[in-house]
Picture 1 (cartoon, rainbow, N blue to C red):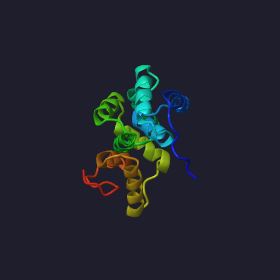
Picture 2: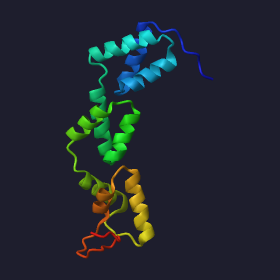
Picture 3: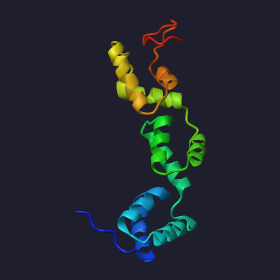
Picture 4: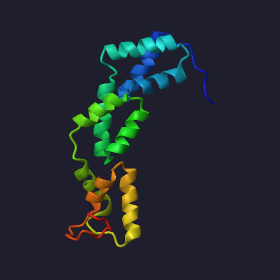
Length: 165
């Protein structure tokens, strides 16, 4: 059963927020959501969030950098990372800056993810190819990246995957 939100003094809200931040970074929006579920006093919550940001204990920039780095290490593409980080309440401008600063070759990342998942062997048929394409699309890679990742070493304009160059 859910507890009713308690009255928040700034000290209680800060202690709770600090406890959350010891585990990992949170975006301001995530932290606000968690605090609002726990406490009723919205002015105290806003005050705590501002103080944490002023003291450098909570930073959307730091959160965004860590989130993007984590997404890349998990093998997620640009589209997936952008969508996931927006859901965490990070502004579009900051998302764009962080992704630009990441300096990632998305084509090579798509190829690495495909090789990790499927190995070096070519797809047996169109059904297998479609399955691989769906997997990479779900991971957040665009058509060109998927094509690059799955393409064989054929010189034909129509290669093993049925792509037309």
